[in-house]
Length: 260
Image 1 (tube, rainbow, N blue to C red):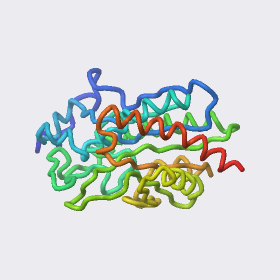
Image 2: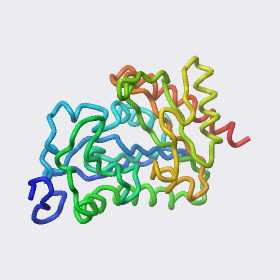
Image 3: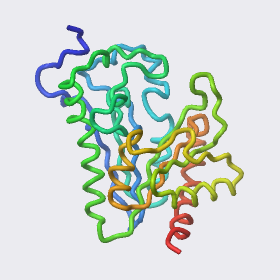
Image 4: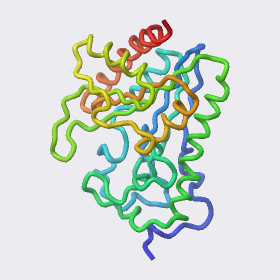
C-alpha cells in the first residue's frame, strides 16, 4: 500500500501541524463576516508534501494566491470578523461538500497528486473530520451568534489569469446562486471604477459546485457576495492593499444600497 494512502498512527493532525482554522474576531459591530476557504496552503505532516514538487505548492492549484493578504487587510478596514481555512485545497477543498468528487483532487490543472490517488472513503473522511468540518463549525458558530443582527457573508477567492491555456479577461468576478442582490450591486460599483467584471464568471456558483455559500448564507436566507479577484492583480503587497482598500470602500456602499 502506498505511503500516501496509509493512515499514520494516532491523530491525522499532529501537534506540529497548524490548526485548520484562523479566527479573527470583529473589532466593531460590522454586518460583514469574511470567510476565506482557500487562504492557506499548509499540508499535514502525515502527507509529506503530497508527492508533488515544491513549485506546485506555489501554484494556484494549492491555494488562492493573494487572497489571504487581501482578507487580512480588509478585515481591520471594515472591523469585521474573518475566518480562514489554513490547509491547501489539495489536501481537501473546503468549498466542496463532504464526499464531493473534486473535494480531494487526484489531478489538478494537469498535475497528478500522488497523495490523493485511490483514496479510500475512510481516508477522505479523516481529512474531512480534521479540516473541513472544524472550519465550517467556526463559520456556523459565528453566524449563530449573530442571529439578531443584520449580516452578510463575504466569501473571498482569487482565480488564475490563465486556465488550460486560455487567458481570462476579468479583473474580478461575482458569483451567485439563488440570491443575486448583493452581487449585482457590487458588480455595478466595480464597473463604475472601470473594471471588467464577470457575473458568474469565471465560475458559476451552484448547490453542487460550492459549499460555503449554499450552506451558510443561502440556507439561512442571508445576503452574500462570493468574489473572485484575478491573482496577478493581488500577487504582491501593493495589489493586495489596493483591492482591500477598494472593497473596504465598496462593501459598505453596497450594504447601504441593499438596505434601501
